[in-house]
Image 1 (cartoon, rainbow, N blue to C red):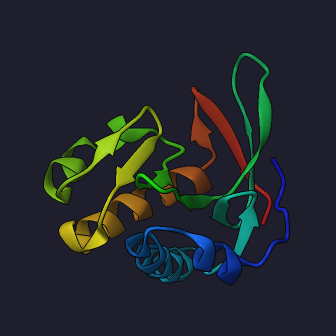
Image 2 (cartoon, rainbow, N blue to C red; image 1 turned 90 degrees about the horizontal axis):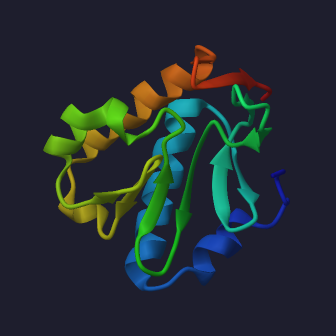
Image 3 (spheres, rainbow, N blue to C red; image 1 turned 45 degrees about the horizontal axis):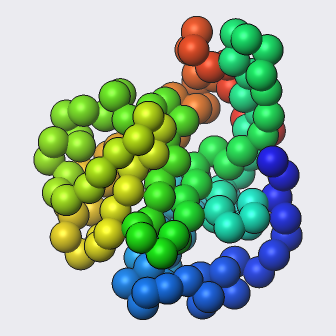
Length: 141
């Protein structure tokens, strides 16, 4: 995947319901603060910076260093190090669901933003360190 260059503000404005727009604005500010990078669209995903990933199988591609998508059902936060790496933080976060590498939040007002910040900081540090045997990462911007 590559950045699409679409308008980030426009993507946020088109998000529904209204809670997704509000949460997208909060997450944009938080991830921009953590990464020091400007937001950019990757299709319907808002990403910050970019990295190249490679699995031991040879599968490879590009994605944001930190990223999220304001989906209708919930906001999806992508954790490249996987949700298992954040079990303690997730226990303290508040209402959420997870996939292997995705954290789904329906309302940021119901979660502990300090805990979320810690999860994102640890995930970012993992990405910037180059990943591990499961996934090799190279930050490109």
